[in-house]
Amino acid sequence: MTAAPVTAPDDTTPPATVTPAAAPGPSATAPLDNLMETLHRTGHFKHLMAAIKATGLASPFNAAGPYTVFAPNDFAFSKLAKGVLTELFAPENKARLTAVLRLHLVPRRVKAAAAGDAPSALKSLQGEDLTMTAAEGLRVNKARIVESDLQAVNGVIHVIDTVLMPAG
Image 1: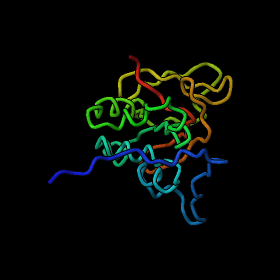
Image 2 (image 1 turned 135 degrees about the vertical axis):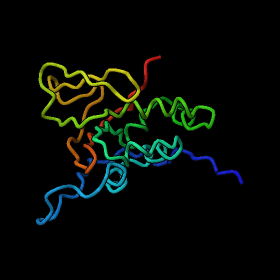
Image 3 (image 1 turned 60 degrees about the horizontal axis):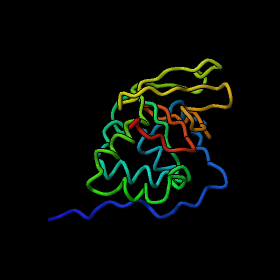
Image 4 (image 1 turned 180 degrees about the vertical axis):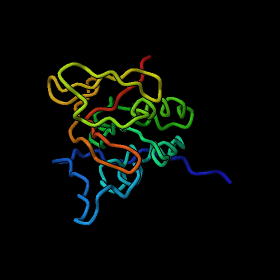
């Protein structure tokens, strides 16, 4: 039995605003969802969720962590050059798509307050360096962080407006 190929969602309409995750209720003191559940709940990460499914890279998003996810929203994926999204989701490019996802993950919790005017160096799961700074607005590399510090039990999510691409 052959599994149906996973394709990128077609919805590339930019959101008017990024809706923050629901705030915990008055009796909640900590987030209840893991990173995967938090991404799913917000509804702005159809492409990212499809990429996680296509690569089978769900373990960091569900594991104990902590992890920091620089999560490109659907609008960020729509900004990729024509054909790049389709190419990334092609079965023969699974390793490349995995590398893209691993670049967006840091194996520790990094809150927005850690970014100062001087760049903070972070090492991604892909092994590449990321630079987080607040000198000209909160950024990671050249991506703007449009929403920060979405808390999950196993880490933190920063929503970014650009898909980070591995070197080479």
